[in-house]
Length: 371
Image (cartoon, rainbow, N blue to C red; front, top):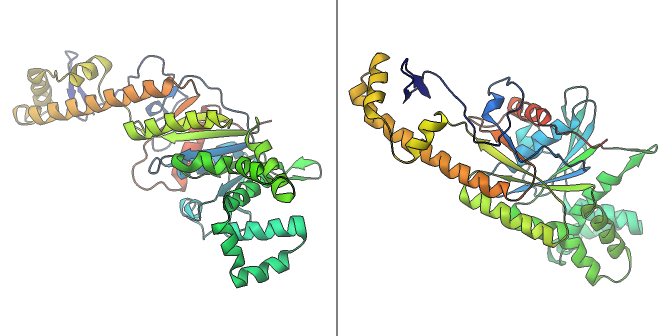
């Protein structure tokens, strides 16, 4: 919040808003809805990956499920069809779309602008194992009997890597599935495990290949890795402009590169616009606020300048120092050399309207399904 005086002095208050951005930040199109797009910036470049499988990960608390849901809507725009998949049994997708808990079944959960649609699937490891037994051994009925005996739960929780191979295998099947010579889905968005576990989750099939010399387990794992390590896949990392999420993002990018998994974009979530013009922002970050001018501006607005100036000056310094810290974290992310997009903070719980607005913003950034 900024009060602008006739002399050009800017007082930290609530009368008008400016949105200065650091050099190198490009502004997207004009805003709409409950937030303005200038609150969000895009850095580095606009090289959105033309992948078919978009894996979304991030440190806990960064809003990765929200970003994954908005991304699925954005990719479905213009008459496309996307599948939004979750693998952690949290039913986070159903909660975001205000829908009943998702079964192990692909069902439409939202309609995108331009006639597209988003379908959703909650992958269950046990059901995926039954699919596997049916596909390779024609043993679905026997598998159901084994589940009643507890053997299926044993296999998916005890066998090394089996659970993750089944989950990623189901995702790979959706990516490559065709009907009448055409792909069923233009894009698949995977709400993946958090950054601390995502590399092992995605790379476990490669480890299984090293253990299984022959048979369907090896062929299944090889098929999964052929997709995950190809240009069909992009792993996107959601972060906040805070030290720990940024460092975890940097570490995960390095891990993904080492294992040969393709990194897509960095999506900075929950950003806020600076509330002071650039010169005053820099000065306040150093603890320099013109108290007499601030008090004068407040008094001119009919407020008690003498009583309020000190408190507002302290808030201005705190805000400016926080913005300076965020900008340093921006610089760290920029060093990764990846396409980087910023999404705004939405007050309150994110509802379906918020998802559509974030999806619109992503499309303004150039997010599209692969042709």
